[in-house]
Image (cartoon, rainbow, N blue to C red; front, side, top):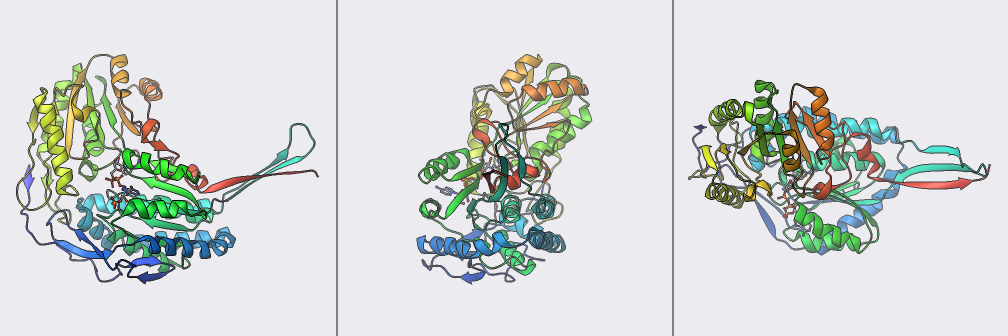
Length: 494
Ligand code: NAP
């Protein structure tokens, strides 16, 4: 493992941290907020404070919903083509400023610059895709089976939407919601994660520049997400909650939303199995496992959390993967050489440490890494564990870090049972040269998304989402925009 020199100094070159405000973005203006408090934003590579953002209270949340309500009729009535052109402009501006945005993401989240560049391209693509969707939201018109009347179905904007996003993809998790909501004609209040609010504010300024009218997108940060969100969900004008984050917080928000019977889309936690059959192409499987495990240093809901490798290829796969993991460059996200950046917080590192210690105590073997790195920054090294027992905590909890736990299996039936033995069902990975077998196994795995002979599954043009306790609804594809609409049926005698 190559560990770059680490310092208590952030590399802010190429980032105009003063180029956008860190106040609340409400009704198209920047506001200090009623509490007067500020929230520090920490660079996980250097542990220094990068900036402070405003801390919204209940009055600010009410003001944000008011602004979204004032803008709603005008935006819903804006011709789809015009909405589409504005979304397209958001895509173009994000693409033009991709390098600055990538550096900003890398700075506040810690992810390697190469991952941050990938995120910006993915995040911008939601605007291009939904610019195309905005003009293709079509309804239905047909004869009722009894012949007495016609059935008209019209897809209307669902109303004001509250959007809540996590820190692991500060740009993409927001644009995956904002772009389809705006395409459908809705106005929104976004509450980004406290750890990574700077990207959300930089993008808010960009949307305004692209022509998004005041009040259509509002962004508020808060240190009290529970009360602030509850107040917004209790407002009868709010009709949609779209949340991405942990299953635990998702459950709390579902209960809260039930009080006002609000439509909920939930993108929650994962525990993805990665299965390598004996007949897999070794190079393809190792490359796929590296992407599935190490994109974002393992801090992804789709990250391979359990690697199951068939006995005949096990030793060769373990050796090749360990060699790749050991050679990764660990360092500050903004260093272009870095392949594995820091974790988001010291708490996140401690959780990974606990999970690894638990697995080792139960009999797992450490082939590389396995201990948190001392010194500045929240670093955990790329780690490979073998013989991880089924009862280890990491077999059922999200690791959310650069740890690859590998277990051996013998039969197809055995590995399918193991893969499905979880409350989660977001993503899964299957490697085999026999495509018929791959498709058959994929259909037996309880997951919303399967990557077959690939390490990457996310695509703005495809429906992203999970089954079981990984979530409700889909984002992206043609499904994503419909989550922000309500079908209205009109029966008419003609
Ligand atoms: P988290 O703790 O659930 O937080 C997510 C968001 O919810 C943050 O904005 C957070 O605000 C907010 N929040 C926390 N408690 C809240 C409450 N009581 N009421 C309202 N909002 C509240 O998750 P995280 O640690 O940021 O993100 C990691 C998790 O997200 C993992 O489980 C991962 O699998 C999941 N994830 C899922 C997907 C997907 O598409 N399925 C994608 C990415 C991540 P604060 O920042 O202020 O706490």
